[in-house]
Length: 216
Image (cartoon, rainbow, N blue to C red; front, side, top):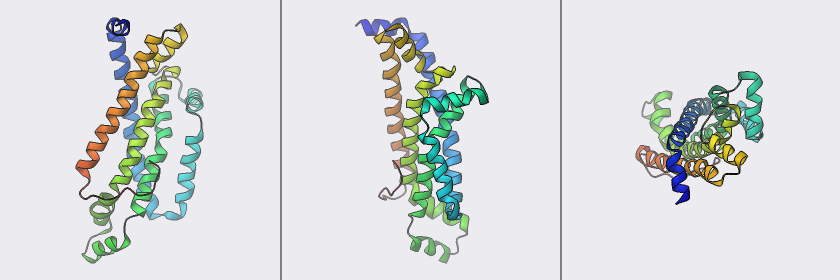
């Protein structure tokens, strides 16, 4: 009851923090999806550089998230922009790798059949390769989404706002209710986002295909 009372007295602050958190997460995710999928597709056409590009993305993800956010300060200052760039970089790997792996894993006989039917390269990509690779690509997007929402709590340390304001404010004041007020909504956002993307995946997948390789 005391926790509920605390939430009621902080409704406006909590609503603002949730909105800022969603903004950070959605913008970073959209950037990561666009770049990750496009680059992943291009790598399937130039596999000789795939290991280098994916390896570079892997190195970025090995950087501790707090350090990566700190690296943004001398480059972009503080606020939402450096936080979004850091979140984008941190979430790029699973989408990039899963897009590449998913398309590479498509049965070559299906691609040959499409070409034999007179499809162009673009038609084969959009009508054969991407639909069949979609479960793997979506697994990468779902992984990236959960990662972004979790790491975004640290974005408050560079002035980007979000639920991290409540978490770190609670730590500073030794107020468990404030910590829970930030941590619980962040966990709920991650679970709801994953469930929503799972439904999107089921709607977009034209056939049931087993998930292939890639980090999920």
